[in-house]
Image: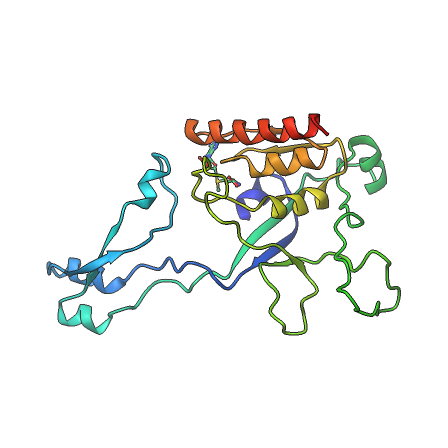
Length: 247
Ligand SMILES: C[S@@+](CC[C@H](N)C(=O)[O-])C[C@H]1O[C@@H](n2cnc3c(N)ncnc32)[C@H](O)[C@@H]1O
């Protein structure tokens, strides 16, 4: 956030994509203690699944990882102790280039077409049989908020945009390990842009942002470092372009 601000962007908000099924990522410090004391920790089996982000392509994630238990007395005292809690949200930082000096908000929108949030296209429809309440109920539903959820929690506050996490390998050829749901990217693209505008994703991975952008009739430009993921992106974008042309 500080780097973004130091680079000249204005931080408008932080949206939270909230979920309950986050993957704990904390390390077991008792094993560090064993290592520090020169004691060899005991092998107790294998982790079935390891999530993470690693150079070298998708296969490097799937290899099993050995599970260890601390052996030293101090290590045992700290067994299971870690360095962080389980993540239950992903922050989405909403930033904007500052409006050029001397321009009003309206003059900037007229000149560049950017800077306005597309609240009309991202309204959250009322649930079936839900009464339109509030001072000025809108026929299309409530204004989207800065909390997006993976599922309804039945806690009386399910008034948010719901977007489930995506199943990895939803398309067989897509081996990207941190695939984002196209529906999430569509919601964000709708929020920050209008038809025909350009969406740029400098870290496009397997191209979910591009797929969402083309489906919403936006133009798309993207960059990806890893050849393997670039090819997956090209394939996915090609499928969307074909679908659009055949409509
Ligand atoms: C979190 S992933 C994006 C996943 C994507 N949203 C999807 O749904 O497939 C980030 C991607 O950025 C790429 N990346 C990292 N540094 C980069 C750089 N300097 N230039 C271009 N791509 C980069 C990584 O290879 C990775 O595929």
